[in-house]
Image (cartoon, rainbow, N blue to C red; front, side, top):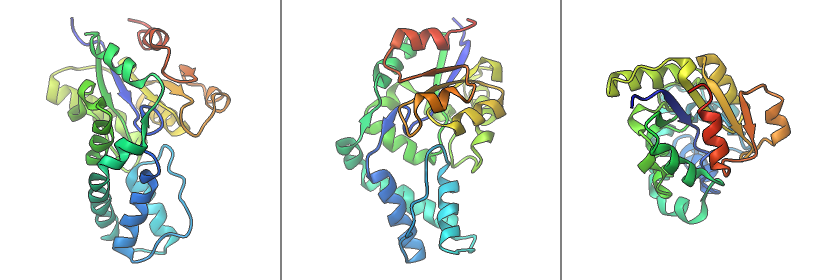
Length: 232
């Protein structure tokens, strides 16, 4: 059976929670490059890693263009070194593991990710909980591809076509996330959107956005599969 639908999962707050180390690695990377810790915390939900770093640089009045790639390189090293801590202190979101396993056995779906994480850090987080085994990470779209999350749906579709010879349209694509930025990304890319209230935004806040579907979490596997199968 040919693939009929591309499912792009956000990672943080949708599939898993990395624990306190998620913010700590940004502090370490910023301090390593700029020599000072940020006094304020940038709100990270739904943002790409380059966007987060740029906001920290603005707070610290850093205008050196070389600082952004340097901080991202340190961020990659810091999270790789903390992989065991992610596995120990983090957790998967309700229903995520079972849902990915079930969807991966359905030939209609191609499973990948759309995330603000730079690609190496996405792999670290997913691998900490064994979630990478059900996702085609080569065809994903990452914060390392574009600082603007709204540009990522076309990138994922192009990778799916070029690497797997599977040509799908934005209308055959679902973005699954937990923030308003996931919804904005789906709208910008012409994709459908399922939002789950497992991150910083509650069900009422997410429901007001107008996504195709909004759920408390991913634990109702049959219901989620039904939503993502709409129109098939």
